[in-house]
Length: 204
Image 1: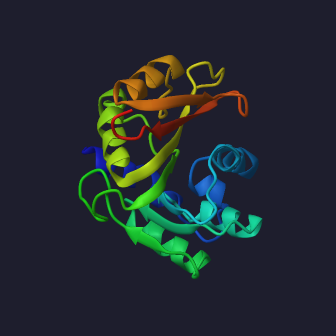
Image 2 (image 1 turned 90 degrees about the vertical axis):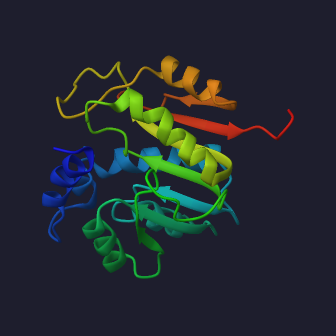
């Protein structure tokens, strides 16, 4: 089975109107999903910024920012068309697109100030550590200022066979090798960490 088919096979059967959004996205609960959003908001000023939410799922980040009154220009993109359609039904005022940002250039160079990616790299696909640097390079091409993404922590006591768990030190080393300033936040959930990649000005 191809990597894309594996992603579809995992998430598409979970999409149902009577299912809670966090459960569709395979988060343990709504609070942990929102904790990941809060790390983004706490470390990056989104006001007036162009934000791309990669793997946007049902558009919960758009709803979270809207509820908080943050004037961010949001675009959500997801690999799964059914997920995008569900996001549009739930949040008709949001902007959601069906595309694979890692395979095609849907936006042109540096089209967004901030790129956020939550949970996209958690599913074990057999090539997680090989794919992560390629995915990060692509997100850095799209972002003018900052890329923020979260990963499952290798210290997690309860680990699921279908998930992949990362070592923050190795991920930070990868980010630094791409010329970015790397910040790790691992104080909000015991099984998760967030990576903040700040692009340095040319010539610095």
